[in-house]
Amino acid sequence: MEKILTITVPAYNVETFLRQTLTSFVDERILKELEVLIIDDGSGDNTAEIGRIYEKKYPETFRVISKENGGHGSTINRGIKEAEGKYFKVVDGDDWVDTEGLINLIGKLRTCDTDYVFTNYYEVNDVTKELKEVKFPEIEREKELPFESIEKETRISMHALVIKTSVLRNNKIWIDEHSFYVDIEYILYPVPYVETVIYYDIFVYMYRLAQVNQSVSMKGYQKHMQNHIDVIMHTLDYINHYKKSDSVKESRIRYMEKRIAEMVHGQVDIFTSFSPKDRKIREQFAEFDIEVKEKNPSVYAWSGEYSGMLRMLRKTGFRFYRLILWLSRQRNRSIEEG
Image (cartoon, rainbow, N blue to C red; front, side, top):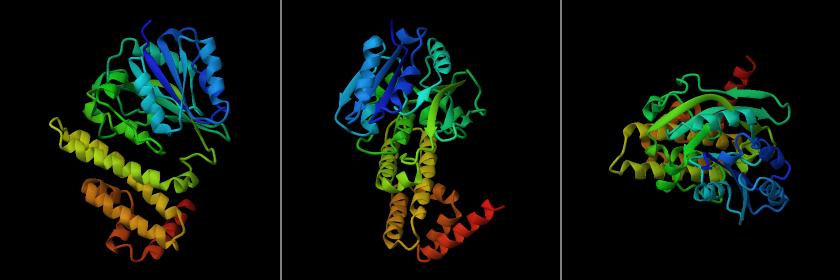
């Protein structure tokens, strides 16, 4: 039977979580239509062995691919290369899916032919187990729409997204390897080639949060800050390259630029999470801001709209850095205290 959906599972030292992840895909109603690629990214624990248990039990559905460590992007790249399903989704090895939601999604995909499909998901606090719904109420449900109809308001995350495999493969979508924070590349690089989208009001992805060592914790952002900066710059280069293409669409440029402006705002938060006394960070912050302006004035301008502190730093040429950061923190503290 033809595979409707390929799920790529980036898996690096996730033996603690992987059984839950893989078990969440198992249901006799969908196994023949589902392909699960467990991309073992050079793990040093029992990740691959756990994957092979499922591969042996469900050989038509699960496949373990072990390779040298190359980072999250490399596992996605390998998944795109190997995928047999009409549609493609990424589920990280420490997350999982709602099985009934997945069954419902595959049922929808049987008759679907849109380029981008997105669904609801839950953010799951790993400590309290509290669930937070992430939905898209502004979008008409179960109707094929042109991409332009969603680009002004909708911020689609990787956890919500299902992409037609041919869009990724035919346009040679390639994600940075040996780097964190490449989700934005996976989301944005196909945008120039996406014509249609559809939203299904189904909860599928279960996104685990609140792990102390997660790369998306502030401690993780500080540790891997250069990766975050590199991804911003590479994506700006991608946008600039697209601007020179024969089939350029201004609305797609604006969509990508606004998403990267949000990421620049996030980078501002990372810089300012360090001590205001750290001169090296201040200098790196100023250099980063100049580079963003040189690469893309629109992203530079939009990122300033998100942060009064950043606007003030720009106006003063970063000369009163410590004072401005202190005032900003005092203001934020007053707001938090009501």
